[in-house]
Amino acid sequence: MPMKARYAEWAKLTPAPAIHQGPPVRIRDLPGATELERNLLLRYSGRGNLPFGLDEMMDDFSKATFGILLSDTEFVFPDDFQSLLPWERWDIENQRDVHDEQYATLTMDDFQAAEFLLGEGLDFYDERKNPLRCLRHLKRQAEAAAKGSLGKMPDRAVVGLERWASTLEADAKAHMAKKHR
Image 1 (cartoon, rainbow, N blue to C red):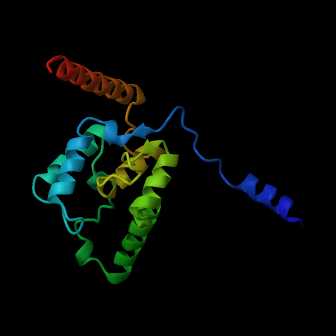
Image 2 (spheres, one colour; image 1 turned 60 degrees about the horizontal axis):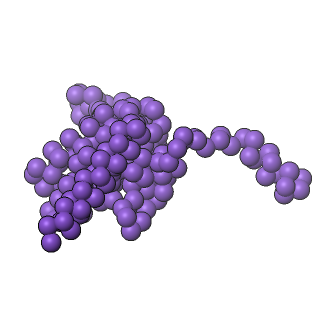
Image 3 (tube, rainbow, N blue to C red; image 1 turned 60 degrees about the vertical axis):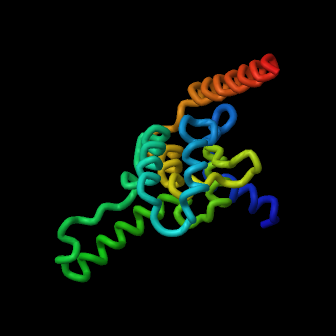
């Protein structure tokens, strides 16, 4: 079979990528994103758990943006897990592995996850085309919302309106600053 025919056959078997209407939602334009990024830059080294207060800010942003928290996307072990027999625990651990496999971003670094989520309609890049610092803590929620399995996608109209309002406000401040010189 010639290569062109093989590719055509492969293309038929591969699911079509999700097509999103309009430009992707820029996460950096959402309310609270700038403050969250600034706090991550100043107070978080990137290793270990988030400092006190920053974890609450991350949860608030996640809930407001995607309608879910990170804990909503994680596998929940039964309360009696430790008292189960080894083969019963293996079955539950296999269920956890199957659960985690639905999240492609779980094994991706920030650059790969940002590119994947861009294809899903969410722009996690800053103005210099680097992934936002919050991506590491929001990628599971973002993927679940984009796939429609949990949560919700941010409303494009609201994001556009917020971006327009902030631009208008910045222009007004610049105009007033020039006027008072």
